[in-house]
Length: 324
Image (tube, rainbow, N blue to C red; front, top):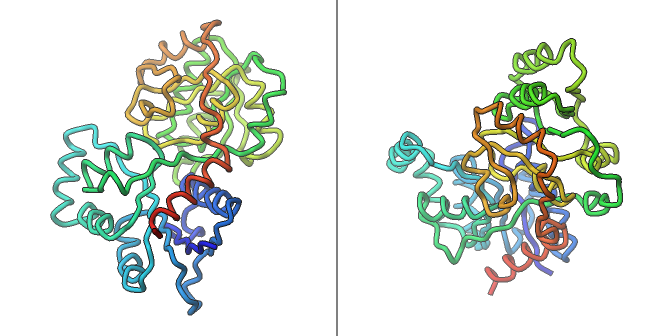
């Protein structure tokens, strides 16, 4: 049996978001395919596993990767990268390659046996900006909970759009609400304000006061039956966020066969979202017009790619390859 030690990006008490959900889903997926995944306990002096799987790159992992290499472990890293679309972003990356996070990340990349990213855009960034070898970079998408694959029997095409996600300026729920109000279309927003985004939460609350088209509900667990039902019965997904890597909520909507409206920004151009409708990021009226459109069409994704079985098999294949 292949044994793998998982290293988190940071202690969960400090931060827990989409990347951590991805890691925990990966534990379940890998174990479902017979991989013996151990959650590393730094206090225990146990024999290292054959493989060390680090979640994240950079300063937080460099020393652990060096020690794992010295212990004879094969090293896998799952990482998220910026997009480096603008000149300023590329300049910061270049400066950091001499002294800073970019240099440390490049050093990490040279030491690892396999690098996992979630989409084709991230693959290109890893190769172009961090010197990763194409043969060592693997694309493994995020996992969609099994409950979404079973939810297609629910009633579809109700008269509301849905906008789930943590409430924050980056995800731009205020823009979503303004578009729905302009369109005269019902919208359901689901999420809690992120720490430090309480002012944005109040801005959203004030915008929604005294109207009935847009409803705001607090977060629900991704596998919560009510959340899955609300997604399945919605007309489609409105998600105007401007900075992401691969939000699982978009994959969930596509697995359910829903139309998806996204801001036309770098992450939205990934192959996985090829059937989404991209709209000018700051054009509220463009979003409003699309919300009113009656015949957007159903966006079908390659559903099996996002199942826990498919992703588990992908991890197993990577682990087996580096052990050859």
